[in-house]
Amino acid sequence: MVANQNYSRLEKMDFNKVLRKNILDMEPYTAARDLVPKGDYIFLDANENPYGTWNRYPDPMQRDPKAMLAAIKGVTPDNMVMGNGSDEIIDLLYRISCNPKQDNVISISPSYGMYFTLANLNDVEFREVMLDDDFEFKPEDILARVDDNTKMILLCSPNNPTGKSFDPQKILTIVKQFPGIVVVDEAYNDFSPTESLIKYLPQYDNLVISQTFSKAWGLASIRAGVGYMSKELAAIVNKVKMPYNMDGFTQKTIVERLADLDSFNKTVKLLVSERDRIMAELSKLSYIEKVFPSDSNFFMIRTPRHAELMQYMIKNGVILRSRHSMAKCQNCIRITVGTPEQNDLLIKLMKEF
Ligand SMILES: Cc1ncc(COP(=O)(O)O)c(C=O)c1O
Image (tube, rainbow, N blue to C red; front, side):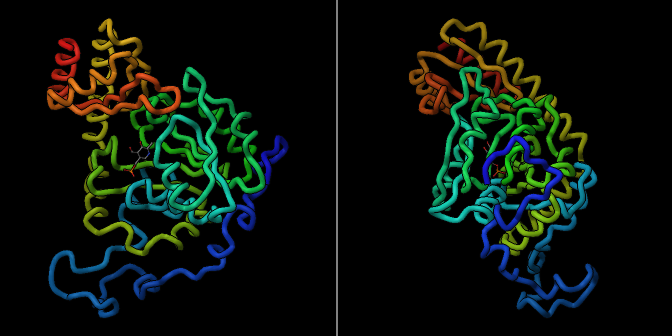
């Protein structure tokens, strides 16, 4: 299964080569309610307590939030897997595709640390392709690392911690030439002028788009993420996930939140304009060498005084994220955009430093 210039996505992804045999062969867990259409029944099938408000198991297929998301995203509910944060979706993709101690995945560096953590958790080799000084990659450098045991390529766009979106055409070059799964983590796409790659799902059956309710939707606490992918692949991931991986309160909260697109759009707009305001102010400070451009609700700065600055901010009650130890991020600190008042304080403290 090597990357191939002549590989055509008109061919179907070969599940027998990309997915684990035990996963393809396994029978899913089924609940009695999965076997009947949605309706008003007396539920005496799941050993629940008949009294209370949250006494019933949640819908394992999350039909209500999926129906709303399908309309917003222009896909069908069959294209979706919902999980306990998008981290769960990525973990499930590792588990359906990678045989421990045998297979590998490829990602870029620096990027979101959870991809590496999940590779370790699943005992899977993690191959990193270093970004250049502009935090960019060449598709051919990633494809050059592919071998017969490469099951998945993980790309984060906009990338964390750099804040930068990648050119969709560069990502699609990889999607077209790699016969395995390509995950594009779009956790921060709502803040970016770059369009989501979700519209390419009908063309590429190996493409998975991962999105989350933790960032622009402001729901990090309820733990909700969504993977968008081909119906065939979604059916396999849904077969493998824990039946009740998304609780009823979370499903209800998502439905309520999705009904209020106006406030979502307003918040995103505010956070983006606040980001630009903070970045402009910090660019004037002589001890800051560089304020990196960003398409996200965070951005990085580089300063030789990064350690001292981190301590100073903590002393003043503000926690920033040092990224100094990451590849290509020497002396860098990542800053998340807060409320206008929090951002005013941030700017004031950083001017005084
Ligand atoms: C790139 C990226 N993907 C995913 C996540 C986590 O998303 P979730 O809260 O949905 O698990 C984060 C969180 O920081 C992130 O930076």
